[in-house]
Amino acid sequence: VLGVVVLTDYNNKTYTINDVSFDTNPQSTFETKNGKTSFVEYYQQRYNIRIRDAQQPMLLSRAKKRDLRAGGCELMALVPELCRVTGLTDQMRSDFRMMKAMSDHTRLNPDRRIERLNTFNNRLQTCPESADVFKIWQMELDRRLVELPGRMLPQELIFF
Image 1 (cartoon, helix red, strand yellow):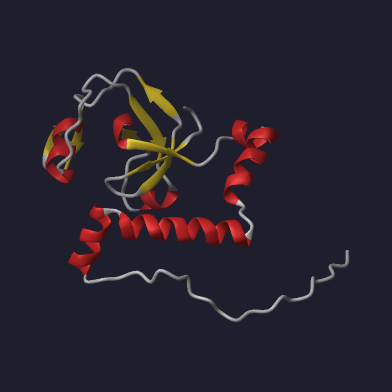
Image 2 (cartoon, rainbow, N blue to C red; image 1 turned 120 degrees about the horizontal axis):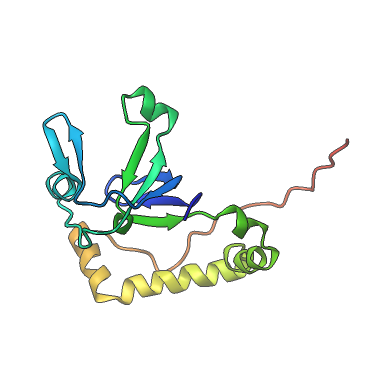
């Protein structure tokens, strides 16, 4: 878990995990402007989020410089069930086979990309739930992708 980058949905921020605190859990308290409160109470009041596992150890992340300048704490405690792993660890980046497999899915040739976009568009238009959302928003998607004129530029020569 150490070194992993996580995203918290409640504030859409990313944090790098520096440590795990087995001494604290969501029932632990911390100081706020209004006095002491537990993490369970804080997330319920501030974000209307109910923490299910009150015994899970907390993840610790060092605050970024801009957060420190804004008056934030040096270490931030995060509730694991509210974190979503994102990004790649150094170990993952050094695994050639994994990076090759990932590039096969992320670097699509133009024909494959068009096919995937058309499939996604078709799924959006045929799914009843998304059709209802489009009606509420008074929005409609075109069945065809937008075509733009373009040209291929010659490859640049780089001299060292």
